[in-house]
Amino acid sequence: MASLLRPLRIFFPARCCVPTRFYSGFVSRMRFLNSLKECDEACVAALQNAHIFLFHRLVPLLQQTGRGNLSPVFLTYSDVQSVLQKLGSDESLLKESILVGCSDQNQAQFCLDVGELDQAAVAEEFKGCFMDLRKAFFLLNGSGAPLVAKAQALLRWHQINRFCGATGQPTQRNQAGSQRVCSSSSIIYYPKMSPVVIVLVSDGKRCLLGRQSSFPRGMYSALAGFCDMGETLEEALCREVAEEVGVELQSISYSSSQHWPFPHSSFMLGCHATVSPAHTQLNVDLSELEDARWFTVEEISSGLQVKTTPRRGDPPSFWLPPKHTLANRLITEWRDRQRNSKDSMG
Image 1 (cartoon, helix red, strand yellow):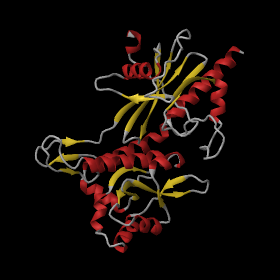
Image 2 (cartoon, one colour):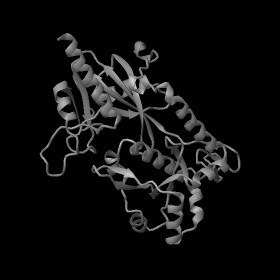
Image 3 (tube, rainbow, N blue to C red):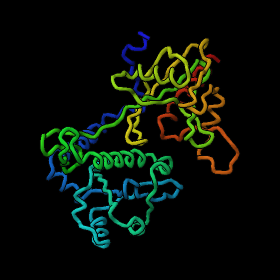
Image 4 (cartoon, helix red, strand yellow):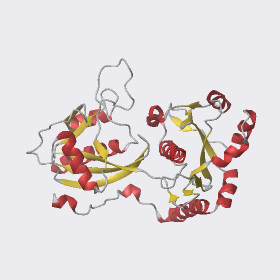
């Protein structure tokens, strides 16, 4: 266990390295966003020329793309203003917009929940549809998924933090929505995420996947769980694997992270881990998992070929979480390492 508690070695894949010529653009965007968080007047001005995407009681407004995927509907300030007027709502609702990010062209991006309006009427006006994020997440395009997930998380956080937990008094948000302040004690609250560990365990030749009863039929994924208060990343990983499948980890290496919108707002930390080939017998906690088993690289490669969610009535099949999930990234990394290892030995 002592070896597991040493600091993790963090490896950044080459594709994450940003060429020098892009640094100035990135720095410009980050400083622009920070200025909007710090200055209410600047934020109000940016909102006039921003892209705004809508939610209705936390359900996002989406539209289908030409390839059958989904993307958020980006609207202008005047688009939203016009619909608010048409549907009899107070235009001041626009001031409730929350800053989410900005485009490569430094155009601010905001989200707004219009839950007080008729959902069908808004959808018809913008030729889109409001779709539950749990159903839509895996159909969203690569750039749309994290943007919509972040927006929903921010909107939910504001809805449930209208009052101070210490004084019970109302809290007031800044214009960007990056914080709330207690009107009585001046306590500042910032949006929070719950840390979750997700790990792909290997015995050197196989990887370990499990499934919960709530998963779609046939889907297996890497093991995951919430971090307990006071735990390190390593301790949480060791505990979760021991609890769920009854095996002890030997070594851990960090891979990458991802914001995950379910059940509310989670921060997923992805790792690879190994177990001794002599201690791979599973003892699955059926209150945690419906099933868990070891998979060969051939089985994993086959599962990764399934690109669409099996439809109701299709024969049972083994498949894996979609491409833009952290679980898929961990599984693909393991598959590639196994292939590279075989090639080097061959």
